[in-house]
Each structure stands twice: as structure tokens, then as C-alpha cells.
Length: 187
Length: 173
Image 1 (cartoon, rainbow over the protein chains, first blue to last red):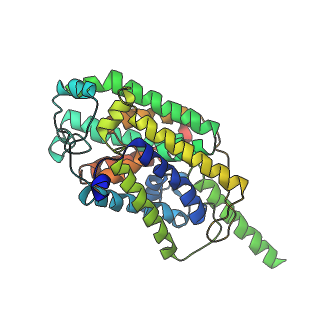
Image 2 (image 1 turned 120 degrees about the vertical axis):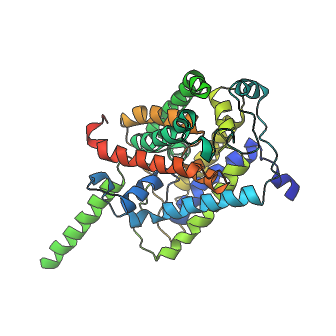
Image 3 (image 1 turned 30 degrees about the horizontal axis):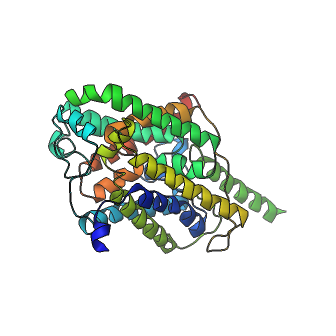
């Protein structure tokens, strides 16, 4: 059993478990699954400036920060205790095409060749980690939610707006991954 | 007379707060109950389980995200698709049987208002998702799973959220 848990889980196990977060949070106290809002609460708590958008009672949304703290600790447990530390198994086509950009290291969930401290201030590392992060924060708030808020919670509640948002997430990602990222990885 | 005025102004202040809180957010707390802070500990456990699943299904992996956007694997589509099926079924059950929270409040679900932000913001987030290989949940999970440099990515995402708040009035919605 423990052996099985230590392997990566197939989609038909993990997906339904992720879906169960929706009723769990609703039943716990009328909370809607979402993560990107935590970034806003951190702004409201630490650097509200004089911005109307950050002037609200963030204490009422503290639950969201407890939730993301749980995600961080859960991920630590999953990686340190519940993992067999085998390289990530991806499609041979991806391996072949990443080969030409010098990405060989599949030992961690993010490619250790790029996602490390020494690469942070190279042009490639800067675009992937810092520009990318900025777009995640700016884009999710502009869209009103992220993959959990719109794509899972919103779609579970059959919201058209969330479907629009999800389609745009996918279109943006497809364009970036196929047409722009290859140039970035060559830098 | 005086007490009514006080009461009204109280209600008003709560409502403005709710209005601001619910701007551009799917995920807000609509519970009217006030609890001591440690009631929030149950969300740590919910997050714990969520974080474990995110890591074990590898949805926080940059490689898996590239596979998804390049249509080279079914894995991510399977995860997101089956999560929606389970989530939608649960929401249907909750509505059908008028399920209440563990504190006895009726569960409320409401419409997400359309704004052009879902298009522009959605596309921008899509770019960021493909670059970092992470949406906000996975940012926290990646840090927990030992890719510490993602702390910088998270700070950058917080900066992005702040800049959005700063520019919000000037952006099309």
C-alpha cells in the first residue's frame, strides 16, 4: 500500500480527490475553492498602499491563508515522506524536444537545470521565474480567479464566465508553450 | 431612532466591505458567522490534503504543464476533467438536498459576473502558467516540495497582483 502511495498517482485517482476539495470547503464553512485570492489578501495585509482594491477586512478571508499554508506543508510531506523520488515520467516527444534546449534533469518536478537560484538572474531564468510569476499574479487577479477558482470551482457551478476564463487560460498557455517558449528556452 | 441609525450604518459598512472583497474574486467567504481564529485550522488540514494530491498527481510539474499545452499527454486533461466532474456532482448534490455547513449555515452558490478581464487576464495568466509551469496553488506546493527558488516567483506573483490593484481603474473590464 505504502509502496503504491509513493508512486505518482494516475489522473483518475488525483483528479477526483482534487474535485472533492469543492464540497469539503463549502461544507466546512461556505468557502469557495480558490488560491489566487490569497495573493490579494497578502497585499491587503502587508502593502495595501492607498488602493481601494486592497481596502477590505482581510481578516474575514484569513481561512484562505490557512489553506495555502496547508498546501505548502502538505507538499512538503508528499515530497519528503510519500515519494519514491523517481524522475518524472513524461512523453518521449517532450524529452526529445527539451533535449535540444539543454534540459536533461527530471529528478524534480520543475526542471532543475533552469529552476534554481543560480539561474535566477540569467535572462532565461528571469523570464521564466520572475516575468512568469508576475503574469500569474496579474493575470489571475484580472481574470478574477485561477485554475482552482475558475476552472474547478466555477465550472463545477456551471458558470459561463468561468468557462470563458478557462478557455483563455488554455489559449494563452498553448500560444506561449508552442510559439514563444521555444525562443525563450534558446536564450 | 438612534439605535436604528447605528444599525443601518453597521450594515452599510459590512456591505461595502463585502463589495470590495468580492471584486474580481470567485473565491470569497460569504459566511456571516464570526469564529475565533483557530476555527481556521480545519482549512490547514484541507490544504494539507490538497497539497499532497497536487504533488502526487504531478500537476505542479513544469514538465506536465508543457505536455498539456503541447497536447503530448492526456494526464492533465484527465486530472482537471475528472476534478470538474466530481466537483459538479457535489455541487448538484449540495443544491438538490440543500446541504448545510457543519455550523448549520445554508450553503450559498452564486453567479460569476462576466467581465472582459476574464479574457485579457485569462490570456495573460495562460502565458504565465506556461512559463512558470505553475498556477497559484502549485507555487505554494513547489516551495513546499523543495524548489525554494519559487519563493521569488511567488513574490513576483504578489507584486503582479498588487500592480493589478494599482492599475485596476484604468484597465478595461
